[in-house]
Amino acid sequence: MRILIVAALGALLSGCLSLGGGGGGSPQRVEQGVWVRSDGQSGRDNPSLAMIFDSDKAACTPAGSAEPDRACMASRGYVLVPASQAAAKAAEFRAATAARNSAPVQ
Image 1 (cartoon, one colour):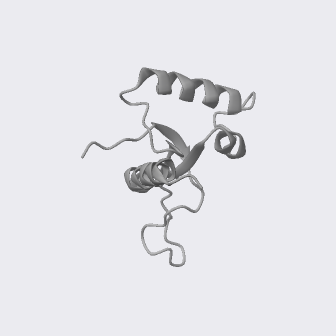
Image 2 (cartoon, helix red, strand yellow):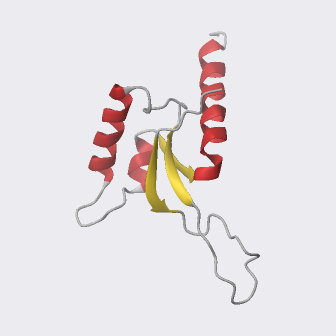
């Protein structure tokens, strides 16, 4: 199965994943996050989606900041998830989108 992930972002998710037990004094490692489209589609093999992502990311990144605003990105259909969960989350979003699109109209 082809893994579809929109784009990796060098952002860190605060408090996303603690490795090393999180016990007193042990360093915490925070997992890198990736932006996933809420419909599960990927820009990896679709230049149009990649261009849209780049445009959305630029529009959502405040001047002087390296990171886009999460609420702005969410309003444009993206979710920031831990890299280790991105493939599963994209698959979940694709399944939900397919279910919505195949549901009978009442």
